[in-house]
Image (cartoon, rainbow, N blue to C red; front, side):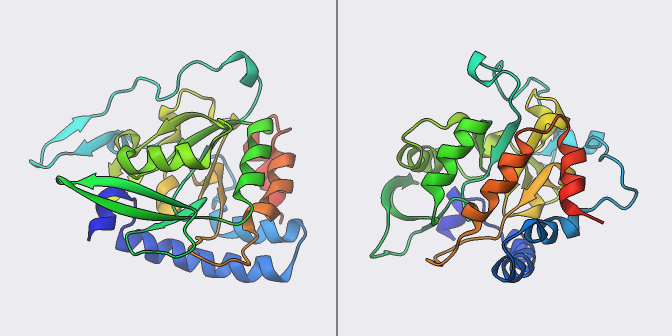
Length: 258
């Protein structure tokens, strides 16, 4: 399937995120208070109530096509924090089904049409922006050090992000090669960013993407084409709250509630 060549979509990923999204979507439509966000986090509560352990040694290994396993570089994925972001929490933000939805099939109301070359042939990728994504990104850029982290290939995700983020909200962009390939999934290992984990968050529609650090996650419902969707708008108060946290673990625990 051509879409799997450039995007992060895998069958297991879609099934997992869809199940989580159905629960979260129902709760979000019923309530508009912090109780909404408790429902987002309920499935992520650690059994012992403690901070998650760092990834195991195996999580830092990557399988190659020839069956061998190599140690990934331990160099930080992010550059030094800039002066404007000193003291801010770092938020890792996913692209596909979190901020946009892309398709090889023509979409009459596409916000962007991005040409992508695959094996010598140029394909048109039709991209829809999630409702309120512009307002969301603008506010997030004011509050946090924002990093785009996608399991998609750069030749697709980079031009899409150029069109999406014209104000330069994302300080850094990370693509598939920065993920850890673990048990069939592209995982975003937050411990490799070069940021303190208690000052790092991840917004992603796929639980498989943050399987190493579930306690740093703010889950979001997968989005495809629902024009009535308001997830990003409803998440802004949560992120405004989290932006003041000295320890994201403690604040997220409070948001999850008893």
